[in-house]
Length: 429
Image 1: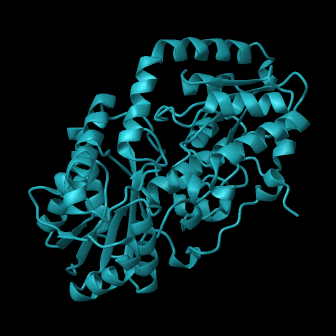
Image 2 (image 1 turned 90 degrees about the vertical axis):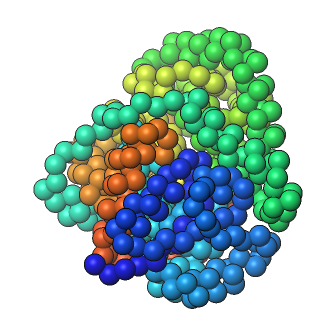
């Protein structure tokens, strides 16, 4: 087995990357790490890492020199959307390195993604049903059952352990570092405190909204599970890169083309910090479009149950789209989504979706899941002892493979993105 040098960049707010490094080192590989913030160093401790403390504009040159000096063969990072990761993925591809992107799994729950080059619009995973069938081969049916216990408290404490050192000591250790999130962590936490203080009121409003939406005929209920506005799946892989504009456009389309007795429910993302002002935004747009009595917003509720109650689901590129397809519901993906495949998601316009969407081919969905599991998915998680143990071992085994599981000929240019619904959503000439 050839010895390789893996360079780790930023990872999840958990010890996952440190444990993964130890697993690779136990297999005879060299692992190096570049820290950008105190939070990175906290979860890498007690291992030693190098630092990048300069401005972002100097990052590409620094990385190119580092890769050459240390004979790096592989880059490993969480997602390819953060500014430093986007530059690293581009440089890695340009210079012939193997680029490995980690993320939460496309399959849920308790799966992880390990994908070459990038995700969504950057993914090598094919969008052709025949090619997907070839990848699936005769592999076994995918088990999507839960394996590990999850805890929101553990997630929250890990997030605090990452951000508090950055806020407290960042000015001293890495004054040029800028968080990859859309707002400062202090602002983020203030939003969460506000949500906690209004929890009962929000839950009551959610129940009222869901009841109002449920009063519509089953074939006239549409669901739009919101993503996080600052998510890189929105910023880089959605029309306009602006969730607020997409939501406005969807409400306008619904007002023009949906049946006069149809209802649309927006569900707030469970990790939304409350700073997006969704109630005010959605109310203003729906009233302007004269559908205020038919557009609802729920900051709460069980997503699976809402999917079951819906006639169709509108998403940008959320993995909730896969959950809805698994429930045999028609799904339209407005952004770049790995499941935006003929036979899985609705391929017509949003106008046509409101007037009569066709559901997925469930045999193709089984094939799709098997192809995903065979190429980009492994069991495991970033939080929790057993989830970490299983995930680290599975990811290490995939990283040790001599070649990628997705054909390099399917590589998509990172600087070329097109969204087939963009013209309809924004009335572009």
